[in-house]
Length: 183
Image (cartoon, rainbow, N blue to C red; front, side, top):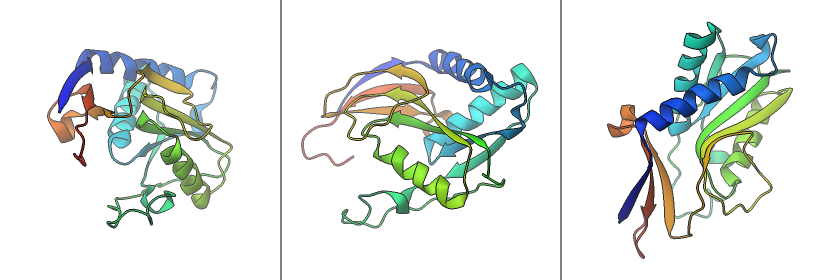
C-alpha cells in the first residue's frame, strides 16, 4: 500500500479556522445553527470547528453526532453486519440550520443516508454539507457547501483523514489500495 501525504496538521488547522468563519457567515443570530458530525472522523472534525468558533467568535453552537449505518442503501448487501456507533442529537432539529460534517465526499451515498437519518429525527430548515476532501467519483447529485480541498483520485485509491485522537497524527493521505486488499 503506497501513501502520499497531501495535507499536514498545519494545513488542517487552517481549514478548520476557515470552516469556522464560513459556517457563521450569513448569520446575524447563530441560535438556530447546529453542527452534526458524522461518525467517525466527522465527529472529530466538527469538534475542532466548534473549538475554533468558540475561540474566534465566542459563540456557542449546538453539536450532535450521527451514525448512518442503518440508513445506508448497501448495508443489507454486505456480508457482515454494519458497525453501529452512537447517534446523539441533544437538541430539537425542527427549523434549525444544520451543517453536516464528514471527512471525505466520494459517491454521495453516505451524505444521502445522513440526510435521511436527520429527517427521521426532525425537520431542519436547511442542511448544508461540509467535508475535508472531495475525491470525486459521484454517483448521486451531491456536492459540498464547504470543502477543504478537492483531490481527484483513481478508483484504486482512498483518501484518509487522520486525527490525533484516533490515529496519533493529524494529516490527510491518498492511499493506493492493492488488488485483493479489503481495507
